Amino acid sequence: MSENDKKLGLSTRAIHAGNPPPEPGAPVVPPAVMSSTFYGGEGDESGALRYTRYGNNPNQEQLAAKMAALEGTEASLLLSSGMAAIALTVLSEAEAGDHIVASCHLYGATQELFTHELPRRGIEVTFVEPGDEAEWRAALRKRTRVLYLEVPTNPALRLFDPRVPAALADEHGLLFAVDATFASPVNVRMAELGAHAVIHSATKYLGGHTDLIGGVISGSHEVVGGVRDLMKLYGPSPDPHMAWLLDRGLRTLVVRMARHNQNALALARWFAERPEVEATIYPGLEGHPDHALASELLDGYGGMLSVVLKGGGEAADAFAKAVTLALIAPSLGGVETLISQPRFTSHRHQALEEREAMGIPDGFLRISVGLEDVDDLTADFDRALWESQR
Ligand SMILES: Cc1ncc(COP(=O)(O)O)c(C=O)c1O
Image (tube, rainbow, N blue to C red):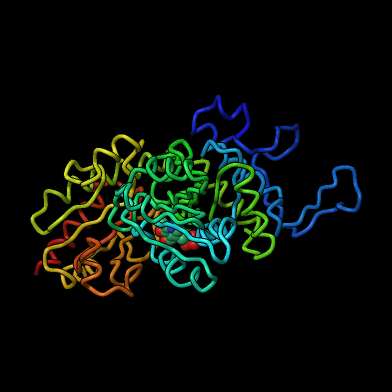
């Protein structure tokens, strides 16, 4: 983040940070530079070797500067997906024989990466209940290199204090990485709470329009540089058009998040009053187990909301069939309201008992609350709740 950016508010950074300086005749919106390579690199004055796989296409650089300004970090790097950002952040720090300690509440693909893929490469992972400092501490080994947390969690929307693993990581010289996709940098800037690597699936709130796949990692020059080195070798570099689309999305991130936060809170309160609903899960409700922590750490409770319907899977299926405005689809963070049942998507490989232990029984609906008029959403959900209990 530049010194100038530090003086600006988040909305202003989201619009202006990273843009080239204004010059007469230059486009106000930086164009997508659809070129894989660039003149130069042969002993020219700058010595710059520009190549889009290196992440130094102008769109990639502008986007990275904007993200660093939003996160308040030295640097950021855009990659071709959230999973690329997660995998390469971990691999940049850990090699065969090393060890990682991770929260047991993780997005399904991250869980699979840590459970199957990393061990295949000689990197062991210990999962801990992240609210318990003693568990983090007890899991540490001589060759532990990374502590890994995801908050808020998917889909149970739990929040765990990142300052606990952050302090432990600092004490032992480890990398502390946090996936803050569900919050976005508008609701929390994890580097301020001690994260060394802040990861987002840009596919979600950052892009915001359900039209791109991308990932971002932010941190010090050293941390981001390590990930960039691997991106050059493994190759999950973002294409310039995606970077351009993401920049367009970021300009409205702050106002979109405000509306996501507002709509989701209103809907959570509405669901909480409904007799067809067994549980309404939203960090902004006083009954949520992490409400106090969420109120302390977050600037908004987020756009994700989960409900458990009376009547289990059958009721959830009937609800999903009955909605006409909300759309049934995985993913989240876009302008449109999306609904998914984790038993068919992120948690389809888990047995019912396992899911129940994680607070995801049959009847569980995950709702990515969009930017529609809330009265239209409640009208849609009112009808679907009625259908769910027939
Ligand atoms: C919390 C979280 N992290 C990471 C990812 C992976 O992101 P992507 O699909 O962009 O690779 C997802 C995708 O749903 C997610 O929900």
